Length: 86
Length: 157
Image (cartoon, rainbow over all chains, first blue to last red; front, side, top):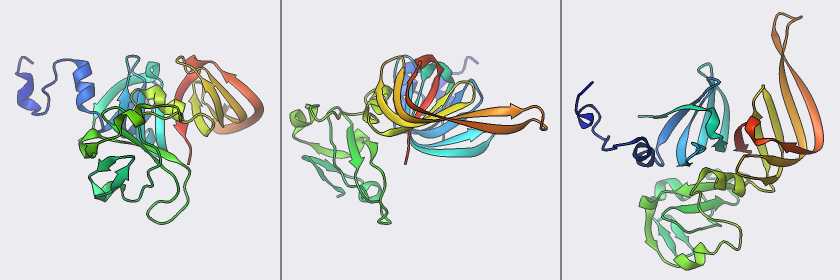
């Protein structure tokens, strides 16, 4: 666990969570909510509440795609995690 | 070259040539609005896209675009997306397996919303009938939604 952070993930020059978030701007991400629902889309922006704006969004419930939306605003209190997709 | 938007020249012809750019705005990124047609020539509802700064070759007319008198500016923070949906029909997902579809009249930073001509869909587990999921629909002329129950707000179309 004490590995140099940069070694395993070459892109992770980030030193803190907010620089991770600014690094993945415009990139495809997955947002998982506390309810278990996942949203996959391109990250437009995040704010201090962890409100998230996504575009070209797909909604997954129990791993199945349920819906597609153009733009989605996610209220930050529902967010469990944000994951950068490969 | 994909095109020029109010003096903003864009690179990346592959992605954006199907868009009609109607709205441009300030900031390091650029907001564009798809007005009419997609590549297939199909009419679509207006949709906003954010163009990453790396696609922008030149920026001129910056001060003109910083002017927000036409009510548009970049999606610099997530709530800007909600602002861009004002007076449009939005889809709102709420806690407690409820969904709303209605025209967005007002919002604030708590995500309190005022919606007009709303159709509410409630998903109920029917315990009498093998736990199947039943939907109940309700219509309201005008609805105030308390922000803490909002999960997502999506543009439709």
